Image (cartoon, rainbow, N blue to C red; front, side):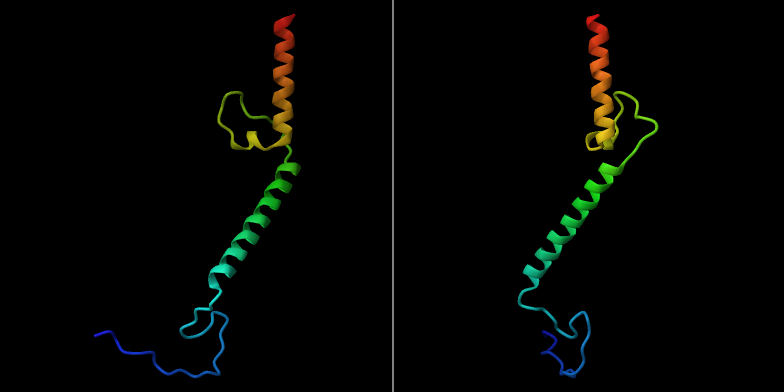
Length: 91
């Protein structure tokens, strides 16, 4: 009741996906390498995007805004804002 064995297939057939019954011995290692490469490329693109990001209008204070945590321009703007607020309070 198991459906039988593997059916014979032409050995000369080649396909990018590996053809019939393909399961290379090192598929786990290959998948891990590709995963690391994808994560690395994504991290580099993210970093480049964050460095080049420019804002004309800054997010409202106290409102959730995800790029507030990695955008250099927003971080510097908020530090300057906090410093000016501290200097106004001490005056």
